[in-house]
Amino acid sequence: MTDQPLQTDLEAIVRDARGEMEHSSTPEALESWRVSYLGRRGRLTLLLRSLASLSLEERRTVGAEANRAKAQLEQLLEQRQQALKQETSRLLQEGRIDVTLPGRPVPLGRLHPITQTVREICAAFVSMGFDAVEGPEVEWEHYNFDALNIPRDHPARDMWDTLWVDWTDPTSQQRRMLLRTHTSPMQARVMEKTRPPVRVVVPGRVYRYEASDATHEWHFTQVEGLAVDERITFADMKGTLYEFAHRIFGADRKVRFRCDYFPFVEPGAEMAIDCFACQGKGCRICKDTGWIEIMGAGMVHPKVLDGVGYDPSVYTGFAFGLGVERIAMLKYGIEDIRLFYANDVRFLRQF
Image (cartoon, rainbow, N blue to C red; front, side, top):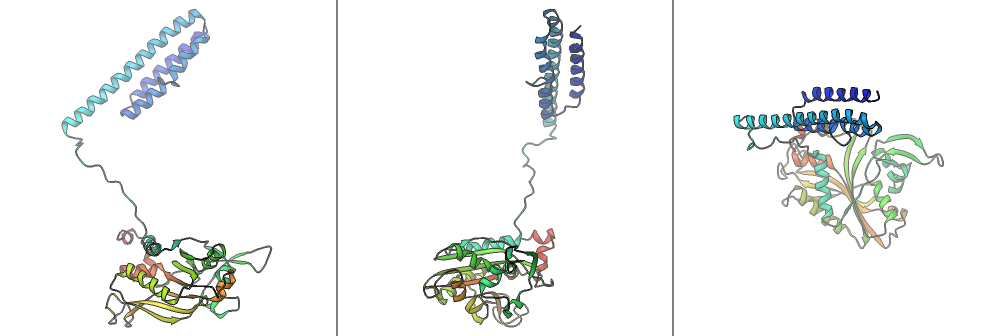
């Protein structure tokens, strides 16, 4: 008889459904059970659809049994649903579930202190009309050195301990790659693609081949700044950086500029703030000088402007660069830069 296989399948479906129902103890599990057996693509529903292939006599016999099975499963589902409702009601009455209690707190992450400091620095400059941009960490030698007035034989290259990438451009052996030693390469990249006025800050990770200690790491974060336009003067630079220092370290901070050397600016300067620990009197933090250096800056060198197609007789500008870890260490009183990258949750939770 052709109805025997269908009857066997029907018995197996009912048997499996009863067995699975014993382990369905939540509303979600019951819904999954219902979809599996009584849903539009459920096992019993698909078997009922297959009755159309039987003869009229077989259809009557198997169909009647299938309908009885369906009624049994629906009754079984309803009984279990009622049992779950009664159990929930009992637990509520016994006070084992207090619906007035607040929900369980969801653990939330937080931004790394360096990321927080980067955002605070960028926000200060963005509010003064600068745009925040990013650049590649694997850089061409040209942008990292040559375009910044640091040719291959220039002694200033000794100031950076470079991590070179073992790859050269097959079309030119003179094009070498490296892990950028500073964010200054974006000066040339931005000016090549933009006509003045230019006002950008460039946050990013930089790399140098040097030993780690309390104040040095082989990788750290910098923020580079650049402003180029007609009639920009040293006074514009001082005013901008003066405002930045007040926004980051407080309105009562004093600022000092002293001459310094950087190949891609002329004249160059170092910027320092009075020590907030001793108020300029001299202590261990400021090495008894009363001042703490926070960045280097200066007017963009005419050769850098000329190299990107800007006329130095028309356009002037200023650039600056600062180490984010140093700013964070000064702001939060941290004495070891390595703490930022030790992945110690006890340290990171403080920020």
